[in-house]
Image (cartoon, rainbow, N blue to C red; front, side, top):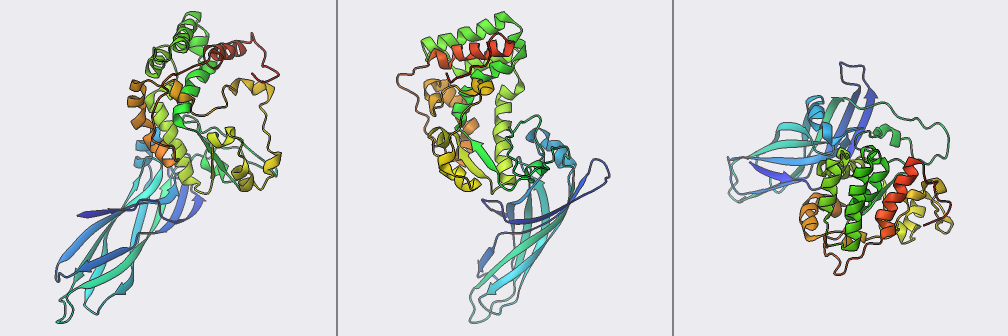
Length: 383
């Protein structure tokens, strides 16, 4: 059977309502979407043709996490049907078009998709008709009984702005975001994110903070990297962090889940503005101001003293000084989908003469540690 893959999610109408079980279900949804158009050009009569259309809808499971995908697939009930709509036939030859089967599925982002099996049978062609062209599409309707988390912070005041980190272990349920008229998804080159997280994670690494020997081992690796950026790979630094009891969020699985959750969020809220970190550090706030109906000239962001620890380089492309060839080989396939989705060039050329400043590396980590341990008060001015 030939399969036609629709490259982008199709427009979808969704109505949700609360359900009181049976456990674990708490949501009943009705959804309707238009499948892809199909054109048939045939000169063969009395032959049954079958084919499949594979596509995603824009129905997204609220609160979905990729780590629990098997549970969602086992605990989401979908009753779906499809109907064919005929647009055109080039002559009056008898034919039949029908839906044979509709099979729902949940993809890795928590979106609901369908495999629709179609068939057509053309009667005997006339003396003057040597072929028949048929154009039609189909619509899928479905009831979905599922579980979606309900715990979130209700917004009761007007004119509220909220910053939410897309946490892989403790995600904010999607109904929270639906309370806001406008959403902004902030993205960054994931290679720079790797470097940034490699350093900032020291602030919350309790096992390392409690053990001076572990901390010194980590700092020694960073100082070696500063002295000769080619001497230590990111892979080696990350492996050492894992052996010291680092969070699973900093494993390859955790990184992949973080990127997948961001893509899933965007699929659930396609109207959200994608605002790049690179655009922000370049000082171009016009797209953000336009989306929020604000004055771009008035946007002069400053970092509060209590959060000065997050201020490190304010530059993009810093990863080229950090990566070694083995890092490129390892992380390139892991980050490819996210980079392609958000328009980051597949250019992995590393710096010919890499330079890593201590104040942006080991000294930065040491400052984080001292602040975390209470031996250094947050700076009142910038670095």
